[in-house]
Amino acid sequence: MRLILMLVVLLAAGAGAPAQRIPDTETVGIGIIGLDTGHSVSFTELINDPDAEGLFDRYEVVAAYPYGSRTIELSFDRIPENTTRIQQLGVEIVDSIADLLDRVDVVMLETNDGNIHLEQALQVIESGKPLFIDKPLAASLEDVLAIFAAAEDAGIPIFSSSSLRFMKSAQEIRNGSIGEVQGAFAFSPAMLEPTHTDLYWYGIHGVETLFTVLGTGCESVVRVHTDGADVVTGTWTDGRIGTFHGMRDGSHGYGGTAFGGEKIAEIGPYEGYRPLVESILKFFDSDVAPVAPEETIEIYAFMAAADESKQLGGVPVRLADVLDRARARMNGAEP
Image 1 (tube, helix red, strand yellow):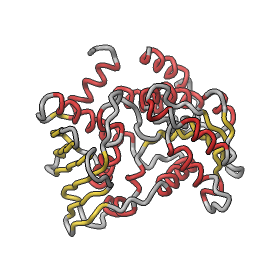
Image 2: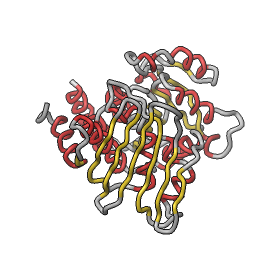
Image 3: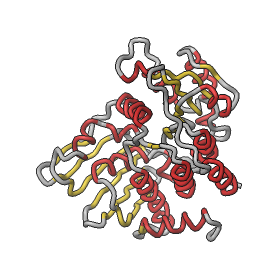
């Protein structure tokens, strides 16, 4: 059913309709899908701040559809409280994604449950509205690929990212502040959710940090897993090595170290949601995604390969092989 739904929307979206441009002078209305995460309220507090200036003053969250997960208790238990809080910020609650799309110019898909992101994203893509998808982009690699394929076919701008990507230090390192990055280590919490590829649920934060400073080109990964932690080491095609440490026991935090040709630098501190939200608004203003689809796909392939390495007892797994298998499953050629 999932593949059939994707094909139907691809055919509809591929009829030649260009991405709908946002208004040039009016306040731009943002719609939020999913109130099962605190991100929805936190982002709205920043955007709808009556004292907001500059780009933030041009945008307003005007409508929200609460669902969201209906199956993951940690997520759906948050919906009533988040619904009340977002209403207090002047946001209208609607009964469906279709109702939401009738009221807004652009969309932030905030649903915490990646299992329903494909279904929800396809509705937005069909409408022609620019779309930001919060982490996790999806619960499986085949859904990640399907979302990007649908957006590309329809000519709709989308992007997805963890807020950790937009730490000032990470952006400076990416832009050459320590010379060419020779290797990196990144860490974050890595709580697991059984319905998702392991690191998609929360380890994405540290993995995104790793790719922000190293860029693309990871060839293979090896994962060591215990109940309390994960260590995933990736080897890039040019011989560089990047390591992610995900923690479930003990103290939690976000950060890392980048090893450059000129010096070594810490990655951090984490600066909250504002840099990400500002990047989302710039994306809506320009239709230019700050993260290329190819990089995001490689990030999710890295995490999917880490799952396979875990299942195989910690042997190296090539990202290209993982992507080939995911594409085969999309096409019904592999169970």
